[in-house]
Image 1 (cartoon, rainbow, N blue to C red):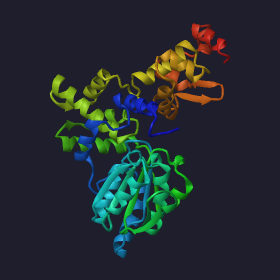
Image 2: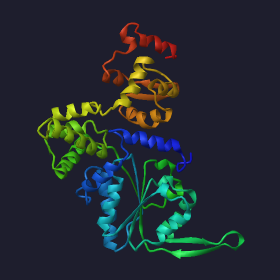
Image 3: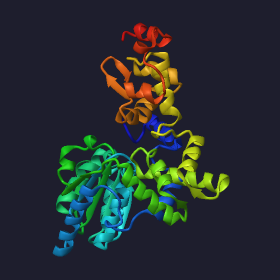
Image 4: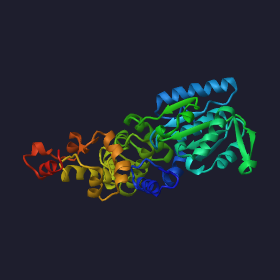
Length: 363
């Protein structure tokens, strides 16, 4: 798949960005996150193992008076990869340059960036798996030997001019670590995988953000928002802002459990963090197909969405929550899905319409 030229990928990003519980950042998120980001590792909430390991790497580099090893951060969107890259630069007392894989279309684009780096500077390369192959191959030598070969001319007369680079630290971020070729992955001195947050950790994130946003919130209100945030700080902060709006307009501005529950109900985010699209997928699977198994294309038609939208946007969270299973025969609802929507499985319902559909689709 050509990530740079794919209109399907752009459509998927737009769909995910339109969702209140989507983990991708939109314009508002980018602006607000800049103000809410922690400035050092001590202030960073969650990711205990990654923080502890990264702290050792940075302390050792400072003690040696050297640049830190190259760092690869992997994990789902919204878990703090960009924030950690900025913290790495701050901890090392170095400037940071931010770019992304899709922005580097040619090796010359990367050479221009690398040749302008200062000694010790941190280069943050987001979505590194989407970088072009020629640029990727140039990055191998830059990371290992701090040198790139710039090609001057074309054809038989082309000449490779070696260009020495100052020592720098590359921080790569990816949501798909499996797409990185082994030669690139092996050149990172430290690799950290970002896990989804526990509700208690998200509560700490929400309380900290509420203080920075000058929002009054009690413990129960933070817990209510945290429980619907899909284990993702970016979503937690977005829900906090929407609940804040509701509390200011419809209540006295204080976020309590009741206010948070009603506000998120207005935005169609239920107690487990499912939104309209998630529930539509589950309802079609349960009510139309008796819980499955049913093919992805058939399920997408029933929901009125593109196949890729159902597979890439809705299904990952439903599978992670144990509400849906992917099997060789198709998608199947779990008992937890029936319970969440308050429906009775066909085998317990005494010959419902769902039971007939289940037989029709070969369950």
